Image 1 (tube, one colour):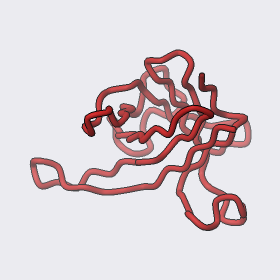
Image 2 (spheres, rainbow, N blue to C red; image 1 turned 90 degrees about the vertical axis):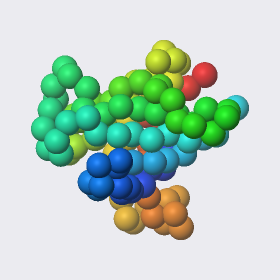
Image 3 (cartoon, rainbow, N blue to C red; image 1 turned 90 degrees about the horizontal axis):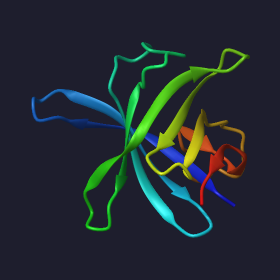
Length: 123
């Protein structure tokens, strides 16, 4: 069963400005992948647009993060924001949803964003 947990993080860029991003782990039947999802537009912009709102990076075998796809900020029919992730590998897509604080499956890790098996397609 595939699942993903992502955490909101901050770092200082080379210009000394604070940059927000998400980092998380996606577990599939075969692999455990470390992803970073980095905004490329201002927070709150680009919702439901055809233009991507985030770059998707994955940790390579040698440790550096490499570009792996794009993500879009979307709203569902209940007006809840989620992030739709599409990697360059057409067999890996997922939807990340804000974590429910009452969900016992995630309670020990307390992630900010999660994706369950029903929203991850992975080879």
